[in-house]
Amino acid sequence: MIQINHLTKSFGSAIVLNDVSLTWESGMIHGLVGQNGSGKTVLLKCICGLMRYDTGEILINDKQVGKDIEMPPDLGVIIENPGFIQRMTGYNNLKILAEIRKKISDDRIRETMTLVGLDWKSRKPVSHYSLGMKQRLGIAQAIMENPSLLIFDEPFNGLDKNGTKEIQKLFRELMQTGKTIILVSHNPLDISEMCNTVVEIDAGIIRKRS
Image (cartoon, rainbow, N blue to C red):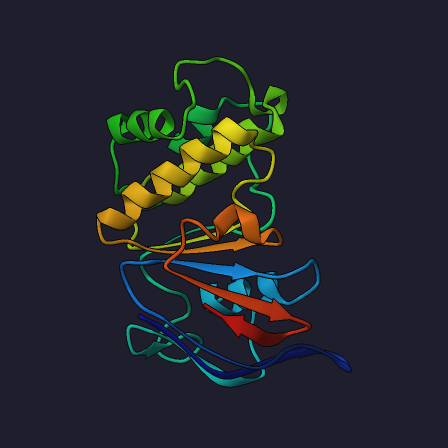
């Protein structure tokens, strides 16, 4: 469970998150929508431990981010544009990332690339990938180590209609295995049909819940 209590974050005189309180249950897909500049990405960075918040608290399974834990221990995430080594293949990029924690095999990397619709045998460097292919590769790096919490910031960017449906289907299948997924978009239509809950944020304030 993710519990956010009275969270605030400012940059100078600009209040980016204003008394945000939310509860997201485990094993569900939760949507967070809002226009560009509404505070979505800042909220994600605070949840992931990538940015300090000013006041309030973020609890992940009753442990406070920034106090009890620096970041959620079992997390897969895409925030903004995933960064990869452009001269290398997608497979080799994922292999380098997998070496950091040494949790998964080469077979798992291949399986994950296939799941997201990429050819792991391709020798094409990432610099020659389309925006949609880069997005799929970012999703692959987030899910390949089988984390229980997944956070995706604008995961459908660069995907065509069929690609969006494929990734939506994948997310539903991941939820069915017990994962908690947070999807963030400025387009409510991207996520309204697939999310168990949807929250709208505007100017750092929660405006609507469903």
